[in-house]
Structures are given as C-alpha cells and as structure tokens.
Length: 72
Image 1 (cartoon, helix red, strand yellow):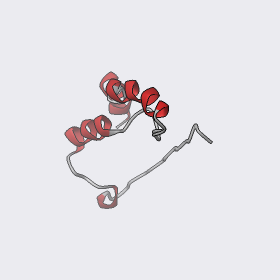
Image 2 (cartoon, rainbow, N blue to C red; image 1 turned 90 degrees about the vertical axis):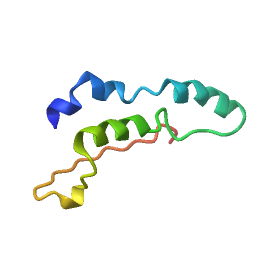
Image 3 (tube, one colour; image 1 turned 45 degrees about the horizontal axis):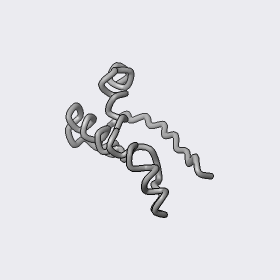
C-alpha cells in the first residue's frame, strides 16, 4: 500500500483541473465548494487497484484518517 500511495500516479489522481478551474467562478455566483478536489479520480484509481474490497472485510486492517476544513 505504501508503494501505491507514494506513486506519482496516486498523486496525480488528486489533480482535477476542471474542478479547480470552476472553484473561483462558483464562489463568484454564490455557490461555494467544499474542497479543491471531488475525489472521484482518486476513488477510480484505488478501485482499479483494489477492486471493491471494503475495510470491514479485512482481517487485520489499520486505518488512519486526516480531515481538514480550510474554511474554518
């Protein structure tokens, strides 16, 4: 997993240029967004590698999650 998360392909999955371009315009018309990425490309990338495995199905799963809200 570390090899996957450190890969250039994984980092590039976070770049969603279409979404980044629309963020300023959405703010101008009063429809702010909740982030700079939708996460759709990251999910597609991970599904391609892992299939539809769920954390609940893993025998020895370790999970660490970090969340931030830059607006607050």
